[in-house]
Length: 461
Image (cartoon, rainbow, N blue to C red; front, side, top):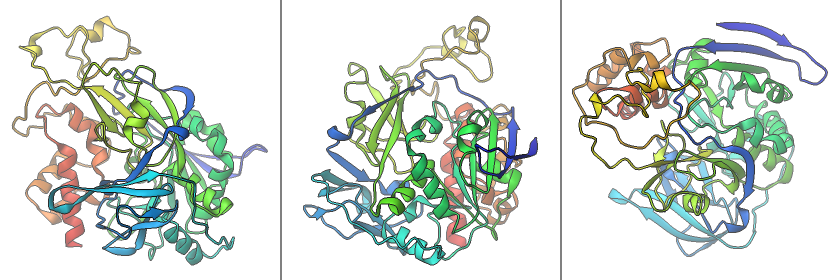
């Protein structure tokens, strides 16, 4: 259901307001929502990093070697596939190490924080789109803009249909952007003003936060309500601006809008932001003021049960990656989730009544014993191994897009490019299949299959 409403008030800007509601999907009742209070960790930050895995489709090359000094905002890497895409040091200090994996692939570019030197940029306050693009590229903030299809860093040579600010995260334990951005309204508004010179800006936000986001000068406000993944960009685009191989849109996270606003207000790069520490493995889930790329250990130290083995996830439980105790927060992530590791075998677990377990299909007695508001302690146990790829309809229903998920996955597995295109590969991202993967009785890594399909299409295009 989409309702067109024109919202006009003295307190709000005049913009087109759309409402999208969807009751399909699933809200996983996991314990550990972050309390709305913030702890400042800026004094304790020792090292931060750039994680190349965040930048899908990029091949990064360092230009500053370990042991050399860098200033915040100084270019330290660039994309070998596109030299216009540059990456800057989040803080001033010394390049501590460049962690590499197989085939010398860069895993993390680590900077040890020392001093407060910043590279300053000339702000011309021009409305010229080319000048704005040039400044964002030189300041390393162009990577905040990604494009659909495929989720690659946006191509500066393109002119998109619109720029979407994705502030409606409906994933499990997702952070509250209205709370986090309350003290950054001025920079957020400036960021929107700058982006408006590149393309029409549209904000996707929860309906419950209408009052907060309607106060900014965007062209359109899309209010979403319902179960996850109603807030996913793919779902909104399919309703409002369907994507194919010929048209493009750009999208950006709310905090990255703030980064752009700060650059044009202050003349230097400031990657300070708030993140949420969540999950059943956290003793006191809450928000923290940090710098983008903060080490996970800095945030979790003293705030998790050290006597148990925990999985430290950058991002949410459905789409995040296992950062580990020595890892770093992903560039596009605004939360860290902590889950107990489930390294145990439960004999005939499928036959037990499941009084304390949650099941999306409602097969356990817990559905009868507990209220819908109860939150459960989840761990990483998969409760079974990989089985033959069978889609019985239980998991497929959690992909709320107007596509045939099982057929698309099979087209990817057989590498049928024409069929992939016909079945909507341009409209999807791995995150759109996260709930399906969670509920999959075959225990298949469905998101990896979708990612492989996207990589195939990129190579062939």
